[in-house]
Image (cartoon, rainbow, N blue to C red):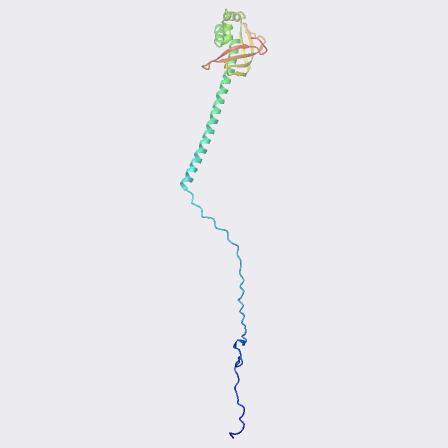
Length: 227
């Protein structure tokens, strides 16, 4: 019957949201939080800056420096060898000169004490000719040379001198004189061939070298004193 009470109206389910007529901003919106994943990072030490590339050496310059160094070393070596040779030559020359002083003094003493009755003149003249300076002046005074020959003849004997030793004492490079000590033993033999006891003598002979390098007996002294 249409005149009766209408039944209650049936409404379907209401959609979620604000009520009708309500404030839309009042709706609750869920918050969404997004977290970025954390990635582990390895920290590496910083590398030192690379050195600038080396310049290629100038080969021509290096070769030139090497050649110069070799030349310098060769020159120094040659100079050292030359110096040693000069020193050796000078030492040998000095040694030869020293020996000539000694030989001249020994020969002078031998000539002075050696003679035979057959060669007295030659022996005395040879001795005189090997002298110079004060010794030559002494022999040249008066008739000293003839008197010496006469003394040798009066001995009616011969004499032989044997040098026991001779040594250079000193050299004066200013006067070119050298003092040489000579030890000699003299043996006199009479006409019958009998030898008298030998007599030892020690003498200091002064030898002079002239500008030409010729050496002569300049003076004759006994080591203690006197001519």
